[in-house]
Amino acid sequence: MKTEERKSMEEGNATDSSSKKGAGALKGLRIQSLSLWLVAMTLMISVLIGIGIIQVMKDYYELADRTREYVFSQEDARDLLFGSNYLTDQARLYAVTRDSVYAKAYFTEVHETRRRDLALEALEGHLRGRNEEVLNTSKEAMDLSNALMILEIHSMKLAALSAGEDMDSLAQEIQDYQLTEEELSWTAEQQADASVGLMFGEEYRSMKGQIEEKMSNVTQSVIEICEREQEESERTMKNALIRQSIYTVLVVILVVISYIMIAILILRPIRIYVNCIKNNNFLEITGAYEFKYLAATYNNVYEMTKEQQNMLRQKAERDALTGLLNRQAFEQLKAQLRISSEQLAFLIIDVDVFKSINDTYGHDVGDQALIKVARLLDENFRKADYVLRIGGDEFAVIMEKTGPDRKQVISDKVNAINEILQHPEDEAVFPKYSVSVGIAFSEKGFHDNLFQETDQALYHTKENGRCGYTFYDDLKS
Figure 1 (cartoon, rainbow, N blue to C red):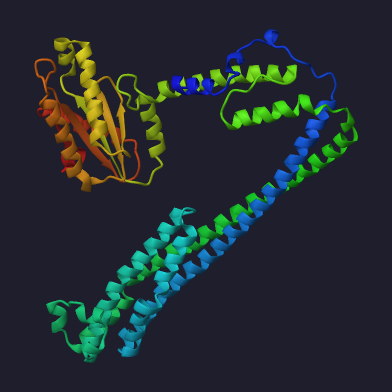
Figure 2 (figure 1 turned 180 degrees about the vertical axis):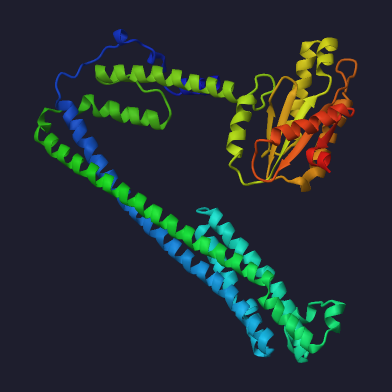
C-alpha cells in the first residue's frame, strides 16, 4: 500500500491504532454458548436465500435478453447475405438478358431497400460491446460486397453498351463508370461476352465465396456463444438450487433452537465489519472477544498484505531510476503479444557513448542522462505505446497497431529526441549526447525473431555513425 493511501485509511478510522494489538491486550465478553451464533446464522442464511433468488432471476432475464439479441443477430446475418446475393442475381440477370428491369431492381436494392446496410446496422446494435470479433467479420463481408459492386457496375456498363441502351435512362453509377479505350472499341458481342465473363469469372466467384464463408462464420459464432451462455446459466442455476436447499434445511434447524441466541454480540460486529469492508477501512475492534480477536488479526494481515502487494508490484514492473516499465514487464509483454493478431513496431534505443558520460561527468550526470532519455521517450510516443528500460542504457518501445506505413512518424520522433539531446540548455554542466535506434515491424504479434531483427537494425545504426535510426526491412532491400 502506498504511504499516502495507508495514512488516509488510518485517519478515516478511529480504531486503527488498536489494529495491531495482540490477543493478550484484547478485552471483551466471550460467547459462552452457541445461541448467539445460531441466531446470526439464521438471519444470514435467510438473507443469502433472498439474494440467491434475486440473483437467479437476474441471471435468467439477462440470459433471455442475450438469447434474443443473438437470435436477431442470426437473422441480420442472413439478411446481409441475402442482400448481397440479391445484388448478384440482378447483375447476372442483366448481363445475360440485358433487360433494364434487372438493372433498375439492382439499384432499387442499393439505394432504397438497403437490406445489407440495415442488417449491418442492426448487427452493430446487437453485438457492439459483446462480441467485436464477430461484428468485425460482418463488416469485412460488407466491405467485400461493396467491392463486388465495382465488378457488377463494370459488367452492367458493358452490357448496356452492347445492348445499345440509352445511358440517360440508367443509374448514375453506370453512367459515371469509365471503360477503357480498348473496351469501348470492342464489338457489341465482345462487350456482351465480357459482361457475362465478369459476373461468372473466377475473381467474382472467389469474392462471393469469401462473403458466404464470413457470414457462415458469423452465424456459427453467434450460435456457439448462445449455446455456451445457456450451458453456463444451467450450471449456475443448478448450483443455486443446491445452495438454496441447503440454506433452507439449515434455517429450519436453527429456528428450532433460536431461543438461545444473543444477537447483540454477533449482529452488531458483523454490521460494522461489513461497513468497514465496503469503505475499504480497517475493522473496528468491537463486540465479543472472539470478534475483537478476529478484527485485530484481520487488520494486521490486511495491512501487511497491502504493503507487500504494492512493494512487489512496484519492484516487479517499474524501473527504480526512470520509473519506466522494466525488463520483467518487458518479458511479460512479449508473452502477451505473441498471441496478438495486430501489427506492431518494436524499437530498441541505445544511449550513445554512455560509458564516456559516466567517466567524464560522473554517475550522477549519467543517471540524469538516462532519466532525460526516459522522459523524452515517454513524451514523444503515444500514451498507448509501451516505453521500457530493458538494460543499463538500453530502452525499448512497443507500438501496437503500427505498421511500415508509419515509418515517417517514427523517424520524426527519433529525430526530435536527438535534436533535444544534441542541444542541452547548459553544455558546461550537461553534455551533448544522442541515441541510436533500431526498428522492426511485425505483421502479427511479437514473434520470436523480432528482437533479433531490431537488434540488427540497431547494430547497423551504431556502426554507421550513431545518432540516428535504421529500419530492419531497409537492410533487406
